[in-house]
Length: 123
Image 1: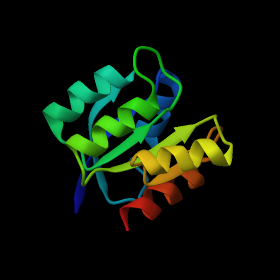
Image 2: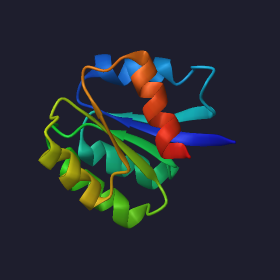
Image 3: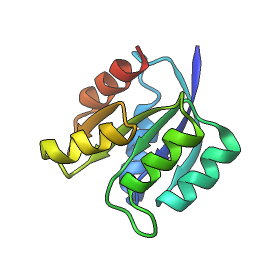
Image 4: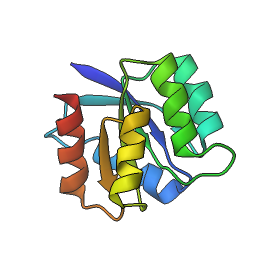
């Protein structure tokens, strides 16, 4: 099975790192359909490509991750959203999950932690 993946983060370094790690042999096929630097770009790409999997930063310009998660949960209710954020307190994680996220990974993360987080929310 393959999944369409949308990567959302205001850091190109993080976007590129996640994209590179998608090639890990432990993961199912992840087809990257878009790289977004903010929530507004993410919504436009999500509407166009209908991803099944989204990685979402919380702190971004123009539209933050919280607002974007709410909108994505409405427009793509079956999409699995993994929050990848430096904001790591329990309140932030729970708030994101209440809005529609399915998992939370704290930055900085290891390659193995990202692979495990993907596997967890895909099964």
